[in-house]
Length: 323
Image (cartoon, rainbow, N blue to C red; front, side, top):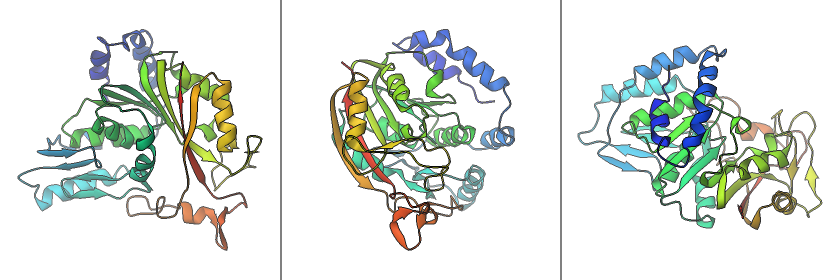
């Protein structure tokens, strides 16, 4: 079973220590609960993955680990076979000692859009809500974050994250906890909170914004990235059963409406930092994610529309501050 003891020890002496009042019990209940049918198998596979300490680690320009002397071809094949057990890999890419994981999303492109607009991360304690496999956690560490904490309840993502950690020499600067934002108390302890690709999956988006605010210290920064639609501050798309084949999409506001939502929740200095169309080069099928991807979710005769006839995915980055 995956052990969270190192994380408990890490936060026992910092401003997250009051989280220990509830976190161990929550994770104990999670371990007792009915887990994904493959979870025990994934954990067993994870145990077969060696811890490798890189001689060169680049988290500034990607998640890239190298070693001298290089791994043998047999060692690369072994690592590849183990990592393929954790498919599909959606967020990345990763490069480990000559094994390259070409993920569905070019998450590095999103990071390049976000990074120029945020406060420097050096020395900060960071929360990434809905972090997936944790790709961006490592990029935050690469920008100097003291501690990057991700939460995501998807058990496959937890196993992917722990596999990456082992291949980065058991690095303890980033941690992933299998929780949802609704399970967090109002910690008011993070210097920066990221929520990227989550808001439109929430039945109550303003409640989500309040939950994010409750995790920030005073003067802390929120980095919010979400699907939006073109339009003024009164525009919001409420899709039917599906949007781009996703079932759980509830509200897609315009960026201007989203700015107002943030202000209504008490955030200040709110700015729309970036807006970009998602392309089929940024999200696509690969050998590490072999099922349907964005090109299958767009109208085959008009790529400006989803297969359901809605505007194709457009994403915005908003930056805001908790006073």
